[in-house]
Length: 176
Image (tube, rainbow, N blue to C red; front, side):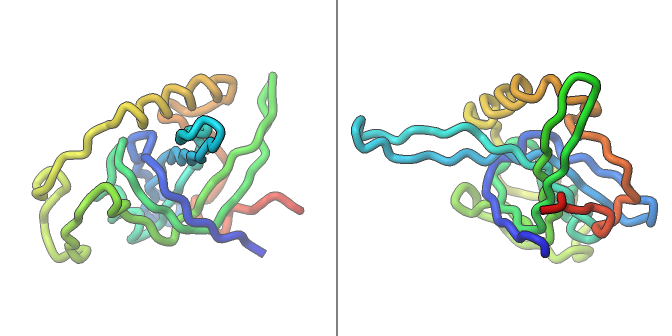
C-alpha cells in the first residue's frame, strides 16, 4: 500500500536537475510547509514549526518543473509519500520524501499563463510575469531547517544521497 499526500509550501532549495540511469530526467527540491493555528486564549494566529519534504519529479514532470520553478516560490505538490530511515556515524533519523505525480504554483500567491510543453521555445527568464521574491518567511524557514538538520550527511545542495537507479519503483517505503 502506498500513501498519497498533497502538500502546499515554499520551495526551500534551488531545484536540482539530474538524469537517472535509465536516461529519464529528474528534478528534486526541498519543500517547507508551515501550518498555523488559532490560539483562542490570546486571540491570535500562531505559526507552527515547518515540516520539510524532499520532492522528486520524474520524466516530463521533471522537465517542466525544472523550467518553471525556483527557490522561494509557493507550490502545491501531490504524490506518493515515502519515509526512509538513515544512519550516519553519530546519529540516525527519518527523511520524508514525496515522489510527485503532480505539482504547480499555488494560485493563492500567483497568477499563471499556461504554455503547453514543447509549444514554445521560451525559457523561464524570457516569460513575462512577476519575478518570484524570496519572502522573509521562506528565508527564515530555510535557516531553521539548516540548523535543525546540520547533523545529517547531505550533499552540497541539501539532499541525502541514496543508492538508487533513480526510477520511481526503486523508492521503497518503510515496512509497517
